[in-house]
Image (cartoon, rainbow, N blue to C red; front, side):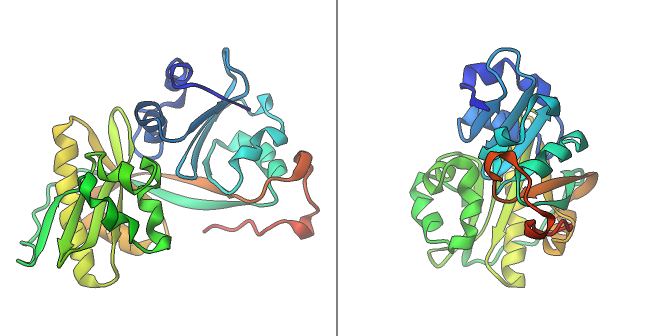
Length: 267
């Protein structure tokens, strides 16, 4: 596959149905923020498109336009693709693991109790990048879709709960679409911090509403804390789908023997 420029992507983004809530917002996010990559089988009238940002991929079009080797850049990703792509995905990677996902949309207003006096809920700015840098390594995903801590800090699309100079909880737009902004939430361990995350989600949701967009929240079916927090914040389930965790690319697109492939189980 070849990489498309942003002007080239703009001509084809309508093929990706980017107005739906949930992961389809990734397409507009790549186009409008420049974070991520757009790949296609060819530059003119592409038959297959892949949008890649923060290790999440939208793959759309005609799977017959692709050879397994074409998908090598999509190794170690979470790939949202229609079922007809499964044969070429299965041939391209040493394992492809299906994972069930839920899409929620905010439909009900919620008023949380006041936050503790020692905590401030406010938008993040570029000066908050150091607070994002010191997050644990396994939390770095929260700013990946904005190109890193500085990108998220200056994006104008994140709210945080700050106490005693520390970032305790955070909610941000993860993928900014034309019709919906799909959000992500991070909180330090503990019930108190989960309550602070609720404040951040509600503040961010109000912000998104003023921009004239809907608010969606996508999470794993097995992520009970996220599902509970989404429900408490007024989000309701609207869609279920499956994306696929890809493994390493198979050299030359030759499928490995079954004994060398990873398990195909829901995550």
